[in-house]
Length: 309
Ligand code: 13P
Ligand code: SF4
Image (cartoon, rainbow, N blue to C red; front, side, top):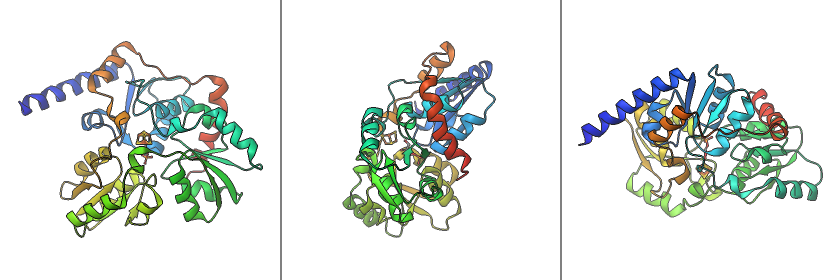
């Protein structure tokens, strides 16, 4: 039964790849996507890598296997390409914790200062921001600004992490990623007790008390890089469980344990092979950011990219 299923998946992947070729489409997948979607993709990566790739590709169609804000970022960078999100209902709970209206209000209540916005945000929030950042480059982006005081939205954990690493005064927005927020020090203690000697890697979206316990703090691609060159063989993974698939693929001799079984983002698990096939067949599920928002949002995203951090 298992073999039959594996064969079916392999066949469908071949069908979708042929369809993508026909459509001159590139398939991108975030590191949290289900294994078969990552295996299908032309490129897997973190938010920063994927947004760069989306900007560079010659493909006419980008199929973004991720969540809505990622497809929007691709549309911001590539207005002449068709950007498809195989499940339009794949949102981000953290991105939904801020609106452009609420941000405009906050900006008015503060003295003039730069607004740094995590890419995990909607296009209209980016449009009100000075510069974007990702979890991989937040410290460098904050350090690249001449200002010593700024607002960082929407992730309070990322903001506190950046403040602790840069010494700058950072105003926080009370947003968070539930998948990371729910990881507790008890979960970490239990995982360490079950796997003594394993290296604990935590994503900067985790709470400060978790980051204090971490051996390594890294974005998803940072984790992949760290593990590849590490001499240790066992790792406790403090981020969404999807990352364990590429970690195992790239390091078959190493062992990976989720820091908590709760670390699953439902939105990241919505896309199935059928959804990718359907949207390529029909060129449906387009995400397009209107010009009035795209142009100011592009400024913030481009500034991050041109900083080369
Ligand atoms: P990165 O891949 O940039 O580390 O992002 C984490 C995340 O939560 C994406 O939704
Ligand atoms: Fe959003 Fe968190 Fe899911 Fe990433 S893991 S898409 S930040 S809810």
